[in-house]
Amino acid sequence: KFLTFLAANVPKAELHIHIEGALEPELALKLAARNNVTEVLSKYDSSVAKLRESYNFSDLQSFLNVYYDTMQVLRTADDFFCLTRAYLEQARIQHVRHVELFFDGPFHVRRGVRLSSVIDGIRSALENAEAEWGLSWRLLMCLQRELPPEEALHCVRQIGPYRPWIHGIGLDGAEKPNPPERFADAFNLARSMGLHCVAHAGEEGPPPYIYTALNVLHVERIDHGVRAVEDPSLLEMLRVRLVPLTVCPLSNWRLRVVESLAQHPIKELMDAGLCVTLNSDDPAYFGGYINENFSAMIHEKHLNCTQVLGLLENSFVASFLEPNQRNLFL
Ligand code: HPA
Ligand code: ZN
Image (cartoon, rainbow, N blue to C red; front, side, top):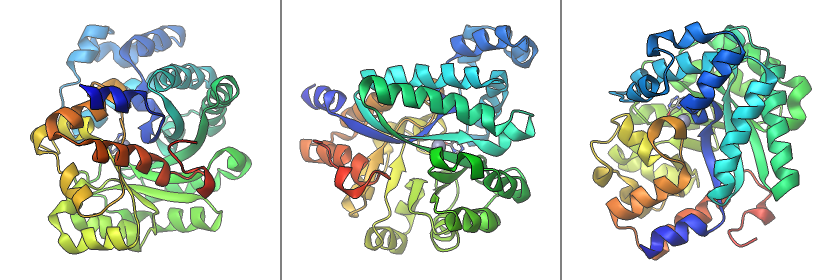
């Protein structure tokens, strides 16, 4: 189909991708062996097939269980380098020209991996891609909402030395029953440091979580946000305040946020006048990278050319690039 071909080949930005969610089982097993931590994947028989079999999720938590298990193989800066390089190879093939990448700060610190290892490894791969093929990038540290807010605050305090390479913070992890306002201190500190602020909200959680992400955390974008469709006055607020949504259709489908791709509310969100973008979230787990998310929506929602080009353009409009660089055809 022509629109799928078009979307696949037009330059685009990806704004919602967790680097740990790009860890394919083959690389996970390789890193487990090289770090002598094969036992962390023993409940999956340390096999690619068993790992992939476990990627049959019933909700967000059932995904997070496997995602947190698997990322334990990531120990050294070089592990994060290899992981990021593998994602960026796919991104390049899919014509991703700009990426805003999340990593999970507090979870890695809690399991004894230093932020310096995480950040140095990711950053080296991003800088290589920038030099080799002109990628532009931003790096955002996600705070895990199921961990204590003090651990989130501690991680934000530790950003100092890495400030040149960290552009913002996000909030991810188990959404219910962890409303955004629990993390007000961490977000206030981040904002005072000049960091961009985004948060996952309205993925599994109800519309009030989107309100508090906006009004208490003062985020500039909402990650997912699909449950905003349930609340017309919230849609209006997102539209008037020009708050973009980073939507991840394959993720929503695989985590049963929506019953089927055909029932995804992307059109309602676009028709409400919101700045919607398409993203992969955790491509190794949800069956596709960014272009597969475009093709899924084109096929299942019968998007027209204007809608597809709008989504592609929005990926730059909603980015943290300099305003004069937020252009599809630059
Ligand atoms: N939601 C919450 N936390 C996450 C996700 C997600 O989609 N992906 C990785 N961590
Ligand atoms: Zn996410």
